[in-house]
Length: 253
Image (cartoon, rainbow, N blue to C red; front, side):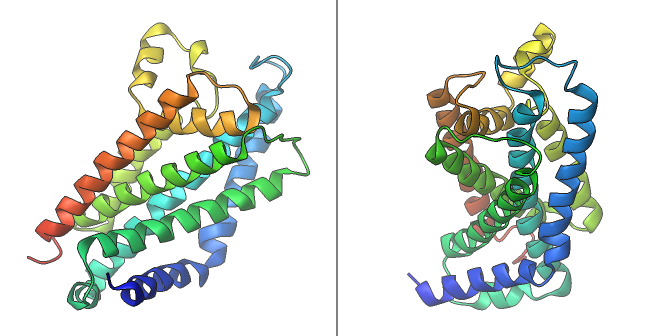
């Protein structure tokens, strides 16, 4: 294991997004605050969620995990694709790093950025919403696993993409619809039966539901099954990612 090389690549990925904190951390936090302001103001008196839980309290964990996973995706996809475009990816490939070390450095950095954005949202909403924590380790596990899944998907998207338009298409036509259909804004049992069934096939739903359970102590689905689904999805996406790196897909040939 090349521990120093792994640390160097991870450190480089961390400083890459920390140098533009306004864009990578502050902007997502402000965006989520706007979501909270608009949706809670309009729907608080019209949407019934769990007994004794206001709509704003229900909404915040959904918005938080949404910002965490979207920024994890943005981190790995933008970093790797930028390296492909400017040709600097060759320095990473020539370094004595194993495929899993490259994967691990990118995914860890994506997790760190996702968690920083989530913490920023948490701090920002404390003055507006009373947000209890019932199971801290549960919400941490779902935040880390969700970030890792989207970090790996971002890596795959960057390998596949040949121009920035492809990255935007992956984000707008895959990530965004799955996020908005995950129950971040509503309980899925309020949906028509067809869309309820569709939601059960959406792995993002289990990330949101498990993360919300960590805060509120209530969920739409069994927490153990949600953890199994998210873990299985992480395993599949990670295996896909490592296989593409092994092939050198669109980065070596």
